[in-house]
Length: 339
Image 1 (tube, rainbow, N blue to C red):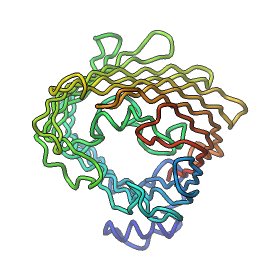
Image 2 (image 1 turned 45 degrees about the horizontal axis):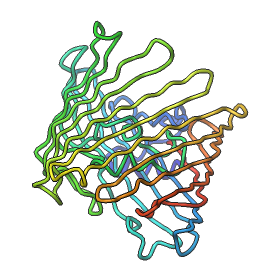
Image 3 (image 1 turned 60 degrees about the horizontal axis):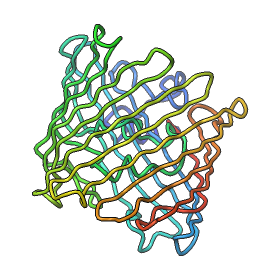
Image 4 (image 1 turned 45 degrees about the vertical axis):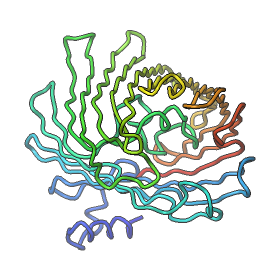
């Protein structure tokens, strides 16, 4: 671990003398502050195993080597970037879409705090639709698999401008996000279809009893279909109390090409504590892709064991019906570490 962090220091141009004093205050999962420079390092890694009924063989792989670099001084400016080396190694990856190793630029942006209620962001950031896409990092989510609702209906990254903040006098502290882009994504992932242009908004309203309710809307076109106008409406909800949690997300994407091109999905997920560190997880998802006559239904039953908040072991069984889109079915497990 210290070798990796020292290597990151060298790559970032910091002195290699980062010895015991630099690491003495480091705690796994909290990031590493680089002295008084204002810079910090973090990241995560994920190893996984899967044995799926719709795959030729079982798979063992290293899925992510992610590096965060962020800077915050005493003024109004902030900086953040995330590099993710995806699929650096897998025992069985030939011919599987998305399995090629690739250095992804997930985020690269600067923030300027206008005042206590508004901040401007410029660069590449995660698309603010729902909650899952913004949480994003594998150690911070409950399952190895990701709901289709959070990936299929919209691109997961935006390169453009954002205005966000909190309005303390509106709805007990409404959190808002407005964003826009004219395309030209910075280092787009070759297996994804990025935005051609997008205008969108996301709002989160605190609820009286341990919950939050969010709403998303977006008008956009994508590069593979620049003449197809798409309009998305979505919601997200989370409730938690005494380590129990229920969350849900839903999206409906309307197409200017007609109803057959619409896409919609919704999922609900329940987390129940079993012991101090172990949790049971269950999820149901309904997803109706564009141009399909039937919706796919997905079921997840799993366990999540948190050795520490930064080291998480997950195991789950995924089932499906009407699975015409080849969603993963079978057993999956992963070990994630947040640095």
